Length: 509
Image 1 (cartoon, one colour):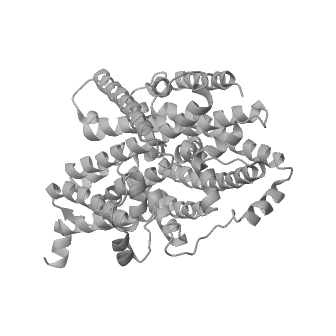
Image 2 (tube, rainbow, N blue to C red; image 1 turned 90 degrees about the vertical axis):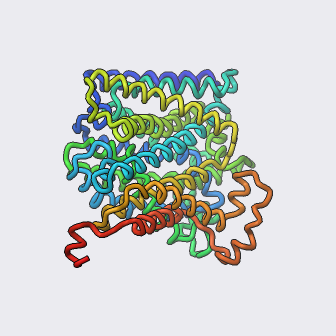
Image 3 (cartoon, helix red, strand yellow; image 1 turned 180 degrees about the vertical axis):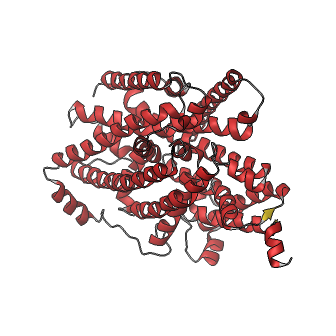
């Protein structure tokens, strides 16, 4: 397929985003950038959050995982369902009752400035690394199939894409992203369905026939009952629940959109609608993976899992239509996770680190500060993408999940301790606890999965295999890493805490 034609559609897509941004960013101010003036339509937020939640990594890697892991990923999605219910009926009422712009303000009101800064720091760290890893993966696909053929270097591709994202988020912020996410989610879902239909037809069968073929290959297995496996059913469900709570409910990017809705009731409707649609969409991604592997087996295609979808969609067997749809769907999956990340990081840094809302400055001066921070994060994103290119790791999805499990743990522990207890904390000890807990969690994970760390760190042998077997007996820590990390943080916070004055009086202490 002509790379020039694909490139034309990419540019046309960006022009459409810029037009949407122009209309939505008129008369914008800091409040519209941070929380959309609390006037966002809950239905648009719910639909747009699908694209933010899935990202380009899901679009490429979840279908690719079916060949080795069947439909086991859906166990994690079932855990998401429970986690999203906790967000809707526990966390959102808290955020609305306190009228928060940044959710990490809760930590300051509960524990003081150090807790506030620690929460913001771990969000900034995790979201920066996670978003740039996702950005790198999708840029790599575009580079291989379009820009290499046009002799455009990777660095130029990354720079231009980030500049374009800056152009449509610079003014409007959340107010603009609510609409661009809706547009991009539509593109992603249409592309997903069309690709399933077209590839199914290429196999000369219908959906029922494809399902039977996938079942015969073992692709449709949903539950893994091997207790030692990282994908054991209860590891995935429990891990998925806490991943959802931490990476959505305790994540400024996701909650920034939720609390931009005017009322709590509408925000809860948004959350549960988003959950229902996400359950269906993730299932369709797994079905797509099964269809892709059937097509690959039939046509002798052997490529790495992350390259499977683009290789099939952009080969010459199909008409140019599916290749165009794939590219539009891919960039539609990419940009909701990147534009939202840059915007939420800007909001978090301005509100939680710089305390811009309470600073004595004019609205114009605050806006100038916000624009500088926004631009700075775009530069950081560009540099991080170049770092990932230097690493050149095809299994980057594993790294994203592992890094999130380590960095979101302190957030999970801090919020859980604040909500579930009434104890006060020695403020000066919060940072040591929030640093020691993830280090311990990472060490336990390394002890459980030495082979993974050997491969990622390019170390021949850590010499931990015998120790791992003697301690864990073959058990491998999986998605429950975030729960372990959160429990370590919670325990550390308890050790540095004391009863609140009211609690001390009630117990006679």
